[in-house]
Length: 162
Image (cartoon, rainbow, N blue to C red; front, side, top):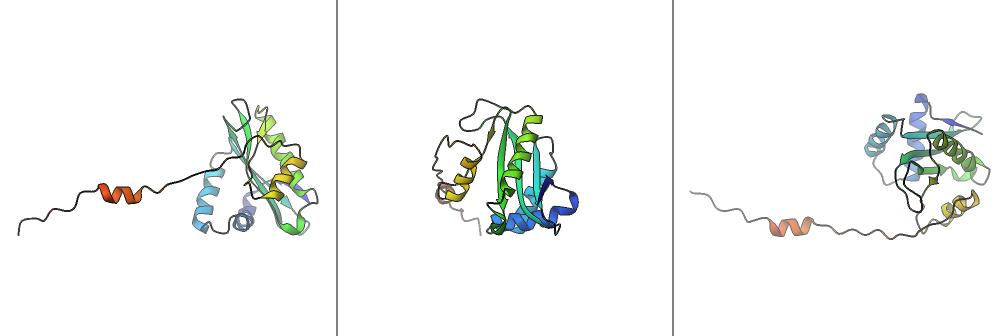
């Protein structure tokens, strides 16, 4: 398995892998995000793991950020997405993708590389730690819908003249 920057003829395979990572995301949203990434390759990169069968078996999306938890202000390389098909895990594929991203970030002046993993993703957290990443924070994200409040605030329609 070799790792390399994404080529244009691999975009469909990349989308297939993204759908495995985020199955609840509509295909149209995957495409929009992919276009956004590819439209700014100065601050974004995609690396893929290509098998002997020429199919993609993993990918990593990286970006340059100015801030990240536990890092001094940027530029900072950031792992936005990292996925390897289950049958190819624990074979160095993920490490190869991460190495490509770290080299890319270093070439752009980054002194740190950062990432995140959901708290319940024990495998993802262990994979990061096995590659030298240190856990620097645990966050709980919250949301509150304001739509109901908006409906209450809107004045009732006034009847017009007959």
